[in-house]
Image 1 (cartoon, rainbow, N blue to C red):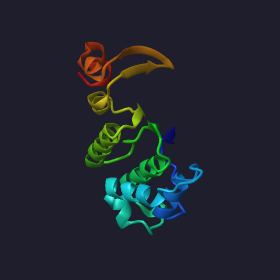
Image 2: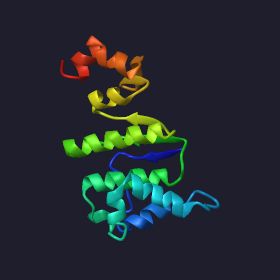
Image 3: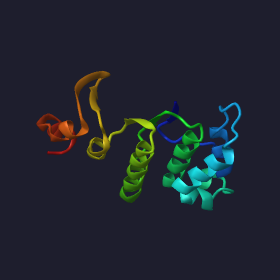
Length: 157
């Protein structure tokens, strides 16, 4: 299990590469480190281009990709993402959601907490609407996206 917290929380003073190394820290013997690193660089080519750059100088989108890449370095079965699209441009939001779908298709379970209801429901197998800490609606992403209650309250319709 690995988490990408709200606000990214990368190690600002370390390089992109050093941040990714920290993501693999919990693995006792990581005999596949080089392959794992290449897998991250393939998924996030921008990180490969900037591997020696100080992480705090990356754009918001690049920092989000780094936070996700760092989390994936631990080879989680479950990846928890807290507001991954927060503060990103619409183009980068689309990219982040495509990456989330790709990670899931590759076999990692995703637990997503996200304010962008439309995009979240579009990629969700199961969805829950929380209000003050309680589940008030649940169903498939498609079911909730079609719900009049959800449309009215969260999707502007």
